[in-house]
Image (tube, rainbow over all chains, first blue to last red; front, side, top):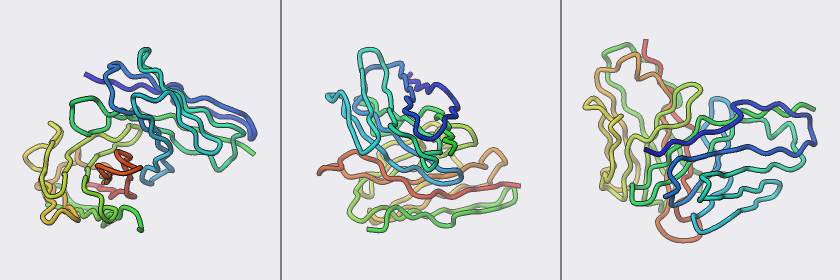
Length: 113
Length: 116
């Protein structure tokens, strides 16, 4: 059974700091991995999707990496801003198991000005 | 393209009542998904459609839950005889099976259900 874990559960940083959010998964047979952002009481916003054949994806100040063999992904946020405050969720799609995403519980980030 | 929309945004009901939620996916997205999210947890998969066909259902989807996508466009999720444990945010997502954004699931704002 695929399990996704995100550490830490919560993180507080001052504005301008670079930070890394971690995601680990137990079954390396994944099709892809997706990072999302969720603001309180709202839906999810897709940030980055990494296919299993890729090692990383970048979008603006965000960089996501994937190491399938070790079952890990990281989301790097450069020069954090108060507007980055949200919960960040990682999700994996398993191979040959439909298209459902398996989510972690998320990391809640707070960036203070 | 206005994104995935869901209605209603909030629903309060009494235990035992039936409720129905609607999801309108992004135009031309052929896959549509339903997830449920409780406080402090990540979303959990319920079911998904490719066009009008319901291709996968989670064991979380008890007999009281039914979902339809009759014309391959919008979808409805009905919960019969609601229980307090059904209180959650119900999220809908859609995706394409081809093109540059293949597989990226785009989520709606969710419907928050409270069962009293």
